[in-house]
Length: 362
Image (cartoon, rainbow, N blue to C red; front, side, top):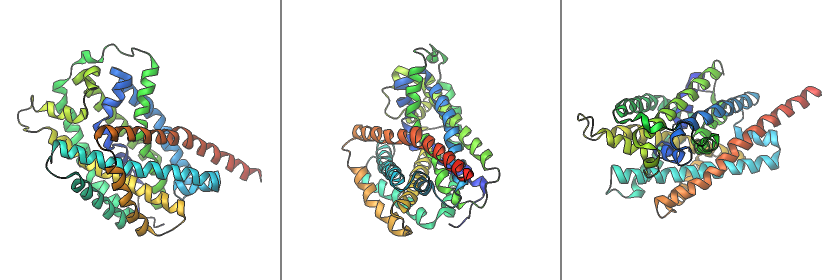
């Protein structure tokens, strides 16, 4: 593989991946379990994600020219490796398809209500396909350009949202114990799993100097942003009202308009961040899916794999008849993601350790 990237480029890949399309719904989904302690769920899962990110990096440095899927086959054996690769393939392809649908629905509800769903989804998918076809270096440049826009928009939204908060909405603290917090943490496992992009792009880096530091900083930024967004949604709406909001973060942005008269449509500020977030999320899932399929079929036909996935994405995106079905299918796909993050990642670390000990024993 062409080693075109510097170690600092990992920041844009991780942050743009982890700050996912789920930013729309995550406060509600966490709040359904953890109630007003949802922010603790983010911290709990965040602590585990540092471990996950390290495993992807550590295993990747042991096989510098291989993607995570190729490493799975090498470390776990061909049969088990192919099963894992197949599971990753289902997860990434379904994630792109359902992500497209959520993007189309949200745009139709809040911005372009008369534009057909298929049009908005097609534009997004064509943009992603073009970037994938241009290669990893182009993707890295685009991520570097979009990252400041995304972070600045989110920070402005957070600052403006402070006018709506009520500190009493956090009480009682830690009511119900650790179990609801742990259940809420499972909801954020899916967006945090995107840190696994590390395992697919390491072969494209020239060196790994200071990369552990950049990975730590990137994950920390994502944890802080998610925690603050969830916390502000709880402080603004309360845990009970939060359960009835389809897209809490957009509702939060709309509520700013009543307090800040200089913004006629404050939700446009959030959409200015969320549309690039959606694009980068789908782009990275698309990239991981393509590299995963290359390992599954042991082929180098990039163009064919990239283009052949497009009809599959559209079928998955258009299959659900309404937004409720989209969330139902997302729930099923999240189960695959949880298996990957809580089972496959630790197993890969253990298998690599066993492999190294056997080599030393010889």
